[in-house]
Length: 154
Image (cartoon, rainbow, N blue to C red; front, side):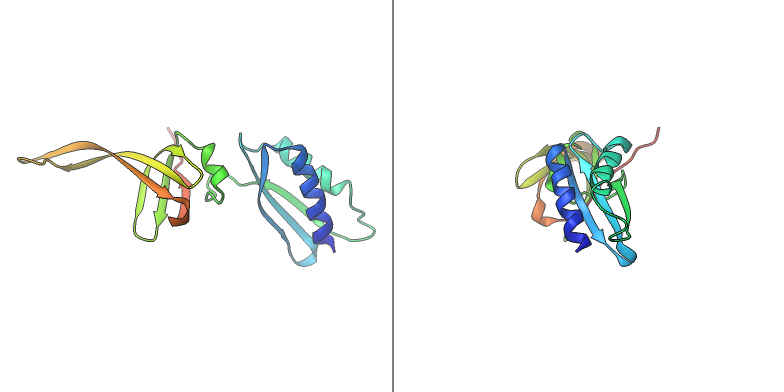
């Protein structure tokens, strides 16, 4: 009952904010409601508060006791939805598929796949030594097991 009420209120709140989207929604023991959001331009504290208020102010604690947590996906969270990739174009990603793991700059996102680019050192085709080559690979969303943004601290 609580889950359906919260889900309805959450959907109404997100209709008002098309730039935000749902990553995860759970109702655990003791009516602990947890909502994880992301946004096309990221999610800030104000966004979380706005969604939280839209839900909390429309529920009666006398009727049903609950706790509510609304958070952003976070910088270290795995990318779950194709929509999350678009805002990370130009950033370095670590992507795991069933066959391999690669790290590169996300340069393109289509409806079905992403494109990663990176530089690699490879043996020269002729002679000794190595040469730096530009690599590019398209990876279908269906092949991605896990993808994370690689954070760089200067």
